[in-house]
Length: 410
Ligand code: PLP
Image 1 (cartoon, helix red, strand yellow):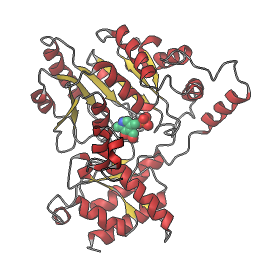
Image 2 (cartoon, helix red, strand yellow):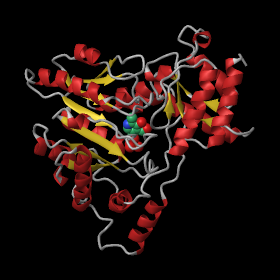
Image 3 (cartoon, helix red, strand yellow):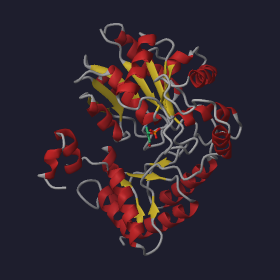
Image 4 (cartoon, helix red, strand yellow):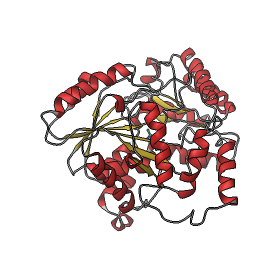
C-alpha cells in the first residue's frame, strides 16, 4: 500500500498500517506463514498465542448433539447480552468461585475477551480518559483504547513483572478512569498476588472517595484456568467493588477461532444494573450483536464436565523445557507458572547486539534459523523476547537448537 492508496482510509487506521505501529505479533506470524509457503524445512513459529491443543472431546460431542437434535430457533438472534439460561449458569459458577452473588443480569456473553474489552471500553470511556495498564501488556489494548479516543497510560512493574502498587498510585490523575489488569499476564506469565491486589484496592478505594467518577478495574483473564499447579488466580473481584471481569474460552478450551467469552459486572459495582445494560447495548451497536449462539449453548455441558478443559500439562512441559534451555544460555526470567508465554531477558552480551536492546537483532538471527519470535520492543520492553509455547513439543526442540546457534553468533 502506498500513501495515495491510504487516502481511502481514516487517518487513525492509515497511521497504524503505514506507520511503525502495526502489530509485531501479526507481522512475525505472517513471516512464519511466508517461510512455510516458501518450503525448505520446518518453521518454529513461536509468535502468536494460537493454542495448539484441540478443544476437549466433550466440546465436540456437545456441539454434535446440539446440531443433531436442535431446539427450534436455536440459531436465531437473542437478547444482546446472551442466552438467559447460559448467563444464569455462568453467574452460579462464578458466584461459587469468587464468593459473590452474581445474577444472570451481571453476565454479558461476548465475542471473546477482545469483544468484551471493546464493549467495556465503549460503555465506560470518554475521549481523553486515561486507562492505566502495567507493563508489558497485550499490544492490542492500544488499539481498543484508541477506538474510543481514550489514552493508554503504561505503568512500571517490579523486576519480576508483578504489580508495583506505589507506581500505580503515583500514576493516578484526575483523568484516570480505568485500570486494566491481565493476570496471568501476556506476555510475561506473571500472576498478581492476592496481597498486592488487596493493597491496590485500598489505594483505589481511598481515591474513589474523592473522585466524581469511579475508577473501574477491568480484569482481562483469559489465562486464569491455565495455571500449571491448578491453583486459583487471585482476582480484584474479591477486593474492589467497581470491577468488571472478562474472560474467554479461547485458551482454556482451545476455541480461539470460535469467539466465545463473557463479561461479569461485580454485584458490588456502582451502577451495576445500568452498566450491565450498557454492555449489552454496546455488544449490539459495536456490531457483535450477540456472542455466537452455538458456542453459548455448548458451554454449560462442557464446563460442567470434568473433561471440559484442555490438558495444560502440554504447555507446562513446553515452557519448562524452553526455560531450562534458555537459562543455560544466560537468559533470565521468573519461573513460568501459567499460560504458554515466556518473556526472557537477553543476556548482556546479546543485549549489546544493537543500540536498541538487542531483541530485534536477535529476532532477525533466529529468523535465519527458521524460528519466529516477537521482540520485546513490541511490548515496550526492549532486551526481551516473547515466546509463545502453545506449539507441538518438537517445535520447542527446533527453536532451542536455533537459539543455540543464534546465541553463538550464527
Ligand atoms: N487479552 C489477552 C491478554 C490476550 O492475550 C488475548 C489473546 O491473545 C486476548 C485478550 C483476546 O482473547 P480472545 O481470543 O478471547 O478475544
